[in-house]
Amino acid sequence: MQFADCVRSRKMVRSFRSDPVAPELVERIVELASRAPSAGKTQGWHFLVLQGAETSQFWDTTLPAKKRSSFKWKHLLDAPIIGLVFADSAAYVARYSESDKSSTGLGNSESSWPTPYWTVDASFATMTLLLAAHDVGLGALFFAVFSGEDELRELLNVPTDLQLIGAVAMGWPRTQEKNISGLSASRTRRTPAQITHFGKW
Ligand SMILES: Cc1cc2nc3c(=O)[nH]c(=O)nc-3n(C[C@H](O)[C@H](O)[C@H](O)COP(=O)(O)O)c2cc1C
Image (tube, rainbow, N blue to C red):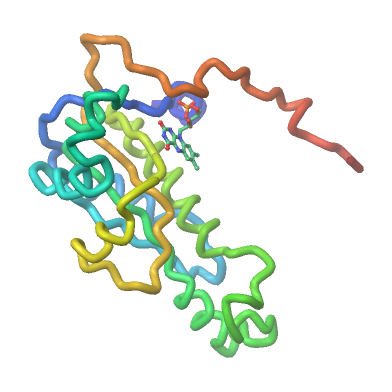
């Protein structure tokens, strides 16, 4: 797929078949995501991948059975992969304490950072992952973990200092039914003219 086609045709997919995704494809997608840029090449992102039956740990914790009857995206729960994206702020403080970066002062503490680049970098990696998935015909949805985070972290043994950025559901899209759009889908896309401020604001 051409790059522009990949970017233009990507949409968040909220309806999946439960068929597994080949491990080679998962590896390819994560390898491409690992190419994302990062501050000081810190690469302070982690993906915790739940596959097949393991995904029920995610859903049972974040969307308990009693809340499911009113949940709009029934086939989101069929996604064979749930990836949790984490950012490691301590890795950035450590990296910027190294001799080539220490003059920035960013190696002192997280609070020295005007912008949390660990969040930026994990987001860049996640965007690359979404495009890489789409490029091979897989569907994916990045979504927030609104509830059950503490319980989930404990269940999955996640180090306490990592920041949860969000979740990615991934798998083969259900093509026999119309993909159910998110509530924001009808919003119009901002044009380049609305986005860009040439020369001054
Ligand atoms: C930071 C972020 C958080 C999002 N959270 C959710 C979410 O919790 N649930 C959901 O269905 N979609 C979520 N989305 C998907 C957006 O609704 C979607 O990207 C947007 O409507 C544009 O649609 P498109 O990506 O299909 O072009 C999120 C997207 C981003 C970037």
